Amino acid sequence: DGGITQSPKYLFRKEGQNVTLSCEQNLNHDAMYWYRQDPGQGLRLIYYSQIVNDFQKGDIAEGYSVSREKKESFPLTVTSAQKNPTAFYLCASSISFGAVLSYNEQFFGPGTRLTVL
Amino acid sequence: GQQLNQSPQSMFIQEGEDVSMNCTSSSIFNTWLWYKQDPGEGPVLLIALYKAGELTSNGRLTAQFGITRKDSFLNISASIPSDVGIYFCAGQRAGNMLTFGGGTRLMVKP
Image (cartoon, rainbow over all chains, first blue to last red; front, side, top):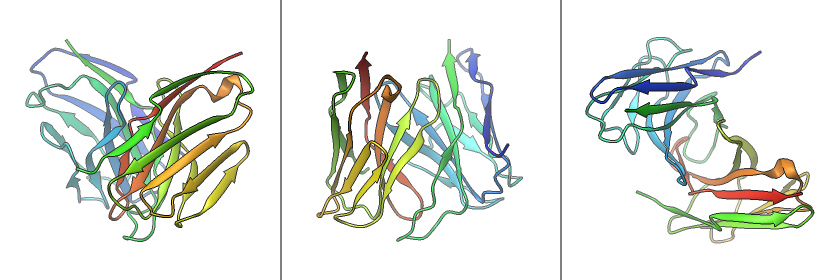
C-alpha cells in the first residue's frame, strides 16, 4: 500500500521540550510539506522540501525546524521557541514541486495532534 | 500573506438538501482546489480547477473557477450523512504552494 504515514497520532509534551514529528512516504515523491492546522482555521504552510537535501521556509516557520536526508522522510521538530505549539500537524507530498502554471496534487497524511501541557 | 475568505463557516442541513459554499480572494490564483477533511484525518482532494470559467463535476459535487480567477464555489447536491466533514478551498501560489480558506463545517441531519 502506497501512502503517507505520520506517527504518532497523538503526542503530549511538557512546555519547553523539543519534539519531533515523523512523516514517511513510499510514493516516490520528490516534494514534501508540513502544515499546521488550528481549530476553525485553514492549513498554514510551515516548511516544504522540493527535493532531498533541500528545504525552504513556509509562511510560519518560526520555532520549527526540518531535515530532508532521505527522499522518503521529512521529520518536523517543534522547538521550545514555538510560542503556541499545540495544534494538528499535517504532512503532505507531491510527485514534484511543479512550475508556476502547473499544479501537482498534494497527498496528505493522517496528521499528528500535538498537545503541550 | 494572501487570505482566502471561505463562507459559510458552518452549515447544518437536512439530508437530501443541496449545499453551496464559496471562496473569494484579493489575489489571482492559477488553480483552485476543493478538499474534504474527515475528523482527525488529512484532507482529500475532491476537485481541481485549472482554467478561469471552468465548471467541473465529480458525482454529486460541482465546482467552478471564477472568471476573475479570484473566486470559486462548490455545490453538493442531494446531501447524504457521509458528506459530513470540513470542506476547504485552496488556491495555488507559485510552484506548488497552496493558500487555504478557513473551511466550511458541514453537518447533515438524517
